[in-house]
Image 1 (cartoon, rainbow, N blue to C red):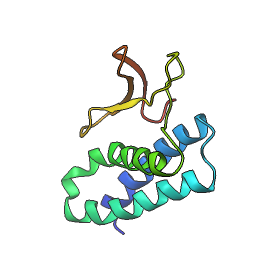
Image 2: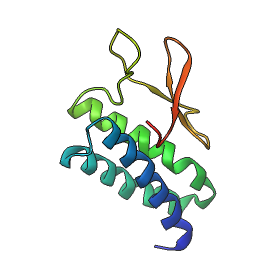
Image 3: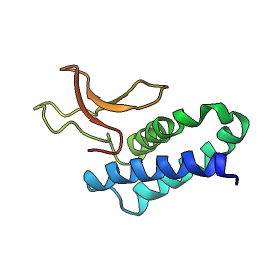
Amino acid sequence: MSETIDGPLLRARALVLHDLEARGLADAPGVSAMEESLSERTWWLEQWPDGAEFVPGLVAQDVQDAMLDDRGRWPLCASCEVEHALALEPPLGDEPHWVCEPTATVVAPLGSL
């Protein structure tokens, strides 16, 4: 891998791992889901190096999808009485952040839960 690819992937790993840890899901299945996404995004980034700024959000969304299939919604909103997952916005953009959609409240930047 080159420096161009390593940097965004390492940043994505750090941000998503922090949020997994914050919600108690940085266990083997959670980290495996993240590592699988990073592996797939390596290829994606090799094809589209200009998309480096989007990698953290894409990895977080990949992990959300994997969690939903295997473990349930992640990350759950901690401030609402009704259980629901936080959404990542913008869906494809730089500086993604977690949002409670029912209240339209920004909860935290990715990596800061």
